[in-house]
Each structure stands twice: as C-alpha cells, then as structure tokens.
Figure 1 (cartoon, rainbow over the protein chains, first blue to last red):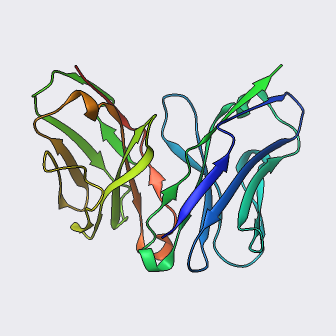
Figure 2 (cartoon, helix red, strand yellow; figure 1 turned 135 degrees about the horizontal axis):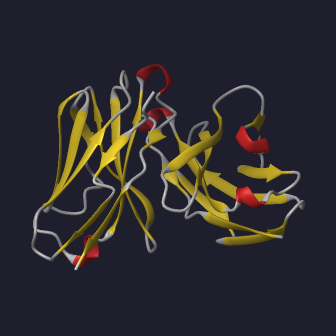
Length: 114
Length: 114
C-alpha cells in the first residue's frame, strides 16, 4: 500500500528565504509523485508532478522538487519565498497498479512573514 | 476551459436531512473522483468512476453515502440522513485516460451539519 508522510504540519519562513517542504513516500512500485497547493477556501491546484524521466521537476510559481529514490523523498523547494506563497501544500503519491488513485499526506501549512 | 464545477459551494443543514452535492467534470475527462477533507483525517478518497461506472467505493464511510454518475458531465454525492460528523469539505476531481495520473480539482463544497 502506498503512503505519504509530510514532515512538519506548519512551516514558517521570512519573505525572501528558502522554502523547503518535506515529503517521504512509501510505494511498492515506481511511484508517481505530486505536489498540490491549496489557498484558503479554494480547491487543490497542481504545482508539479514526477512520473518518469528527469528527477528534478520544475513547477509553477518558481517551485521545484527532486525525486530521490534512495531516500524515498520528494521534497519541495523554492529559492525565495513570496507573501503570495502562503498556503497549504499537499504531497501525494499514486501507482500505476492502483489505477492512479491518489494518496495524500496530511499537508503542510506555509506561513510567510514580512 | 471552465474547470471542474461543484455546487453548492456552501451547505448548512440540520442533522437527519438529505444532502446532495453536485459535480461537473472537465469536458472530455473520463475519470471522476470524490474526496472528503477534514482536519482529523485529511484528504480521503471516497469513490471514483471511469466512464460513468463506479470502480472503487471502498472509501465511502457507510451506507448513508451514495454516489451516482448518470452521464459523462454530471455526478452527485448524496448523504441521507446527514450527521454532524459528516461536516467537511467535499472535493470532486477529474482526469482523462491519456493523462489520468493527473487529477484536476474543483473548488469544493463546504458542508456543515448542525
């Protein structure tokens, strides 16, 4: 069975600082990995995804994530935080054999301080 | 493209009442997913459809919950009778066979059962 662990339910950074949101997964087959962002009172928006190929994936709004199989990790980073990045971020995993059912982590709330 | 459309956006009802949530997937998408989001349990997959046929309803909490997809452009999630513990945000998502690893989410329905 697949699972996702997001380390830290709340991360606070200063504007302009590095953003690092951690995600570790468990999967019995090569996974597909996703980061979604949820702004207050809105649905989930896809930030980026890893399926196959290059392990460093670039997404929208300057975010990127690196798939590290040996560490079973898919951490999300952004070099310089902006106030508009404040939101909740969800890491998710799906497997081909599961018919692409998504399993989500608990989410990490990102706060950006001026 | 209009994206996934959900209605109503907010619903307040009293315990014991029937609640119907509606979803219109993105045109051309043949997979439809219903999720529930709560503080305690995070994002949970309730049920998903492929070509209007329910494929996996193992996440439906109990018999009070039912979902239908009478055609490719409409799905409902019904709770009868509703209970306070059903209070949550319910999301609908859709994807298409060629890129079904990626799900697109609607804005959600915030349900409060008093």
